[in-house]
Length: 252
View (cartoon, helix red, strand yellow):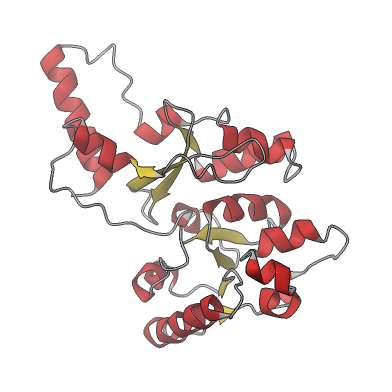
């Protein structure tokens, strides 16, 4: 059973038991949590990554939520518009991760509150996967959700998805992208290992999907040694060179 069905069934039973069907908000959880008030959303504008209008558009596009303690919720919603899970993350006003506060999953909190079965195991998917049905643009896959959100404003002619981690890319995660033009943008590192790992997955995925999956070498070609040591991504490179006019279509 999909997580959103478990959400709906659980909340429906609770409302019936309490006799509060009319008082309870019956909207999907992501709609009730939709917000641009998280530190993450506000810092995107304050740090110059996007305008307020772009941030509001991106929040609607990716259905960004906010937890009760101010974290941003990156909902994982599949290509059938079904909620898989939600990752809660914390950012500082400088738009960098707050490493003093560990990320968590919405499913974890629901299990702790006995609102989901203890053995419920969500099937995670790419962040932004729900955008496939609304857009036919070429797909770009990056590592972090933050990067996908930023790049959706910088290069809106692409649909930006995120794995949520450099080791979270797999052939299985790419299967819903069958029939679409796909470009992977791995983060860089000192040895280029992430690029090689993502290239291997792309090669394996191409065999299964029946069409090429491109891997951009942009960072491997343009990042200097200090940037490699910092393990920057495409958004980091772009904003470190505001006059560079980076064009992903010519650098894949």
